[in-house]
Length: 313
Image (cartoon, rainbow, N blue to C red):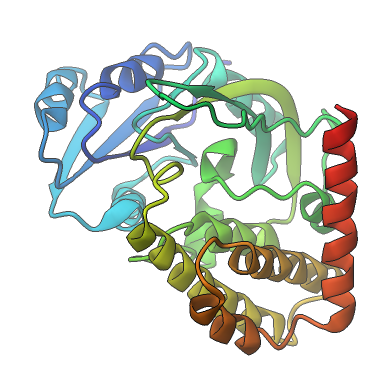
């Protein structure tokens, strides 16, 4: 590629001293060189900060230190200072393939799209108990090489996954629509990614496994203690209310509202299936009045289909 537009890679860091080197190595060693690597140390109490400092010898690496604000706060800090044409998010205990940025930017520049989706793989690290592998592969639904425009709402609704690390985004899309992460909650991607999908005018799909997602003990994804479960419940409650506000807006088309409703149902299911007692989740479910009887029947059918498919495999 003759011209290399700047790409901002945002890496939030919190107590990942055992993994941060593998993460940063995978970014620095990209075959694409014009990178702005923004590392936000979100109040780490281990040796993460010291390890990141060694990487600042590379002039592309910028270390920002702040008191702990959570994942959303750290990502927002990164977005505030980002100047790249494109934005890529990488969590600090994960890593990416060496050709990720080069191949994605080539497609972004060639087709001038707002966003590209790609695949990811999960792997288990230092876990005493097995967890289900979660492979983010969209090839059964999305067509590689196709530019999705008006039909992107349906495509994203049928293949929705919220993690922002599975997308490269044109930064001015976020700026123009003032999209940031909702802070002080868990699962903030559920809201952020929905908002992004509602405003993009074009997207593509790259059928490659660029992202490697690490599952480890005591991470946000695996921590199931009662306090964490309660915070998840409260976060879902807040996310649902924000989605309901979007759903009520007249500016969205029928297809856009289907996308919002799909996500509202997902959040409803997350609350309903929580292992917390009904005394805790019941009042929240009752407030989710936009979920109709037809919606609940649909969710039961989908759950039954998933159960059948699991038994067949």
